[in-house]
Structure formats: structure tokens, C-alpha cells
Length: 274
Image 1 (tube, rainbow, N blue to C red):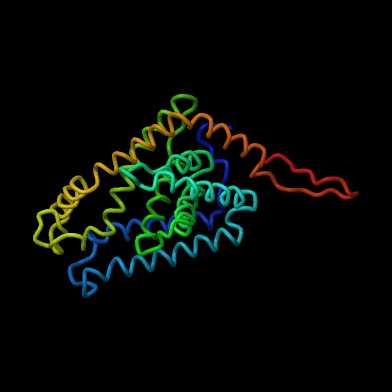
Image 2 (image 1 turned 90 degrees about the vertical axis):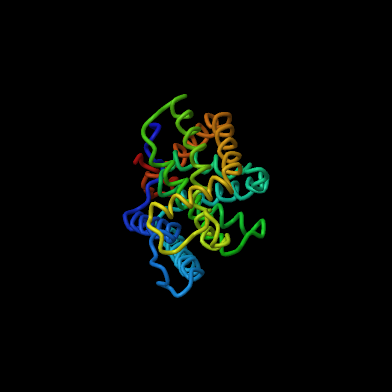
């Protein structure tokens, strides 16, 4: 198995749903730069509207998976990894930015593909929120943030051996900052006094608005994001080679692409190579 070929491929319809979900997620995160002042009557309305849309889209994604977008073996793998990731998350609990949920997501997205990585990001955070009591209006944004981390891991270029582990470690570090950058967008517009120089101010040109947000991101969460980035870097560097080997061995044994054929005469079913 190569260092970049996805072990699990989703169908065309499932891919289309995931792409649409990703696009809507981008709009939901970046609404402060896209929505005209007063378009919804209140600056509190857009996040509520987009949050509701995210929940609907996530429901469509899960429904698509349940209807065969991912086969039973891949669905079983998704369930196992979601449970493992949900169990890992409380170990870090975000203390000083240390979060243990991302390194496994990056490695799984790399081996099993962008579609699987996107879905695993959603299901991992959903399961974790139920376990830790972290259900709230922020949850869809957290789910989409992790979904993007897993999806982009599956889109990284070809590499093998130490170069692959180094690439994933660097990406894992950068994804720690990416996640924080995206999540801050979900509450920045209504978290500060409008008179602040780093607060969201409707009607500003994009460049000035974006500069304000960058200043807000650096001032409020750079330390936490750095903790997350360092955690990802260390975990992937130390555990990455072993976990990648385990994932790829599991993929070979599961033979996700192999059609199942049954023979007459009571003989065991024979699974042909895909």
C-alpha cells in the first residue's frame, strides 16, 4: 500500500455531500467577512442560522453514510476510531492547549482518505461532547473544525517512511493553529466591546476586518494554539510510525475495496482481491 492512496474510498454521492458540507462549513466560519451589516437584523443571528444549517448538513452526511456511502467494514472502523478518539480527548481536556484528539485524526485521515477523515472529525467530536457534557452551540463548529483537519490530512502529497512522518508531524502542528483560527471565528463577532481595536465591526472593508481578527487571534489564543500544535507534533513524531503501520495492516486485512462473493456448496465465502 502506498503512502498516499486512501484505504477507504467513499462513493460519488457521499463525496458530493461531503464537499457541499465543507463549503457550507467555510461559509459558516467566515460569515463575519461575508454578511452585509444588518442583513439578518442582528449580529447574533448569523451564527445561530449557520449553526442550525451545520447541524442539518451533518445529519445529511451521517444519513448518507448509513445508507451505504461507506461500507460496513469502513463503518465499523469509523465507529472504533470515533470511540478511541472520544476516550482520548479527556486526557488533555484542553489544559494549556494540550489536546490529544488531533494526532489520531491526522493519521487516520492520511491512511483512510479525506472523506473518512472528514467524517471521523465530525463523529469523534460528537461522541466526545456526549461523554464530557460539552454539548452546546459551539459543538457544530468544533465538529467542522476537526472535520477539516482530518480531510486535509487525507489530501497531503505522496511520501513514505520518515519523510511521511515528518510531513504529518509538521501538518499536525499547523493544524493545531488552523483549528484555533477557525474556532475563534465562531465567537469573535460578539465576544468583545465594539469599541475595542480588535473587535468585530460590521461594515469595515475585508482587509481591515481581517487585520482586526488576526490581532484578536494572536492576543487571545496563540498560547493555547501553540500548546495544541506542540502536542500534535510530539504525538505524531513518537507514535506516528507505529500507528500508521497498524492502520495500514488493518486496511490490508479488512480489504475495504474487495467485493464479497459467495460460493455454493456450503463453502466459506471467498473475497476476491479488489
